[in-house]
Image (cartoon, rainbow, N blue to C red):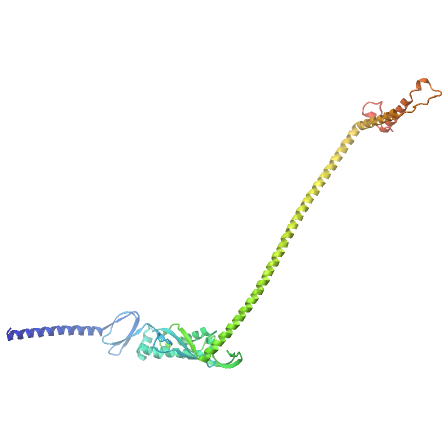
Length: 416
């Protein structure tokens, strides 16, 4: 290759290189220009754009915004702040908040709280101008607010109360003061039992000042001033001083002993009630067994009475029947006797009497008439027995009221 041809090719190569570099530079410049002209806002963020002339605008809706070479600062729409003693939450150090109670005890409270940035232009710009970053917001607003709430909540109770009956109230006090502002309080003297000895002692405690039942605020919460919304906090640990821990442990042992004693007393009382109820049940069972026997006896007696009553009624009916039948038979016989003069009865009696006379005469072995009759005719000498019979017959007929000479019912008519 000649020197001329080499020179031509070298110029062409360098010319081509300059073109590529120019294109690349133009692309990079265009990209840089575009990146400084528009900004994309994610749905989980808000941002403040400061234009070169110093104007500030807040952007809260996701989408593209014109930057015009201005500076962009983004904030999370929602974040979580840790005041935890655990190194795996927040910073790798103990960030728990300090508490001081009205009995002089100390503790640290550990937990987390979520917070939300304001979405109105006024508060957003105000936060940006005063703090300018998320870290500054957390360190200059969130943490001081929580520290102030913890500082003013501790004196409202004793350390042992915070571990027992007022544990939930401690969380409520901290949340309310962090969100709305610290309470206005006054100091009062209280007599409280010592958690170890049980002896009453006087302590100075803070009492919330109320107006119409609403707490009076000493100052407004910084979070509320800047429109930051603090969500309910979560406490994962309250760590007390060793002396306070010992008191709490001793109190828990005492409470547990009291609870056991109360449980035993309740059990004994329940056992007594159970025994009483069982006795009442047995007594009721025996009483109802007797009632069952009584009911059975009453039923049997009622049955017997009913049967006897029925039998008495039956006997009364039978008696009435017999009386009526007797009266009927008597009336029948009376009527029959009135109809025939009791002829059948009289004849039967007459025959019986005559038969008796005949039997008596037949059995007589002596003389019926005297052997010597003075002044008697011969024709009448042997008729003495006949005369006796006739006399007896007449007497019998007279006694029976029979008139043998008259036919029909009239022959039985009574003789006067």
